[in-house]
Length: 384
Image (cartoon, rainbow, N blue to C red; front, side, top):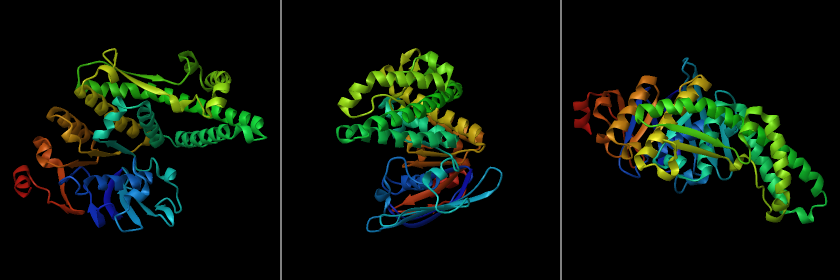
């Protein structure tokens, strides 16, 4: 996929802006707070209908009640595509695209696949288990519509089951509803666990290949589904569901007491083993960076395979975190794959000089953008 034009209105610091985009490496440079990351957020809004971490109301420009984002893009086969996302607190969110109107955010997911790498991405390896589950779910949701539907159904059923647990003493139909929601929850949970297990079998070799290019060490991924023994995973969804149902019976009285669901894929864990040791406990900062880079490069390769189109790569201030060698390796991989990439930097000199002639430079300043003419290194440096 190739973003050709990005337009925003009333998004954070931007009143209105129109940014033509290059097919290769787009470098957005400027001081902190100039609006570089907001442009990456705008691409996420057009691709997912939302950003990763910010609610829609937080994206509104100060003093406004409405934002608008439009992306004009082209598929790898040259087919034009556009999408518009509008939001206001009064009217909610409205999404239109070349595929239809009155769309929901989930109908956008996967149309413009995205690989996002930022300093906060290190939470995948260093943070809580929910960060690793979110990583798994984002990759799978962008590559598989059925998995996305399963994930949304699981969240809805989990909410209903927990709500029932909260009101159990006063609900005359509790017993019937409890059995029904538990049965649905077990079935959906087994499907999600099966999807995740199969995904890791396909994904791990891609991660290991990427990691070998960065560090001469051994990296393994280990998926630990909540309460599911390894032999059940190999037998498929029926065996997983049977074990979950049996496990739910053992936890029933404790769930009644605590008023919440105590099992399921919302408790799964993904472990990274570096040279046989848990990376979370013993890896250095540099090793964590190498693992995260490997995950993102593998995500790029996986989405390309599964979606049949090259993802857009968003690198938010990563050169402040990476040494020169890692930066060159990442950019060389992106160049080799011919991936369109959007990079934000505060200091242009942090971009490896050997790659400069492939870049499309955009100066971002106080909510405005100023594309620079394509130039050789010496010419560009004189303009920066």
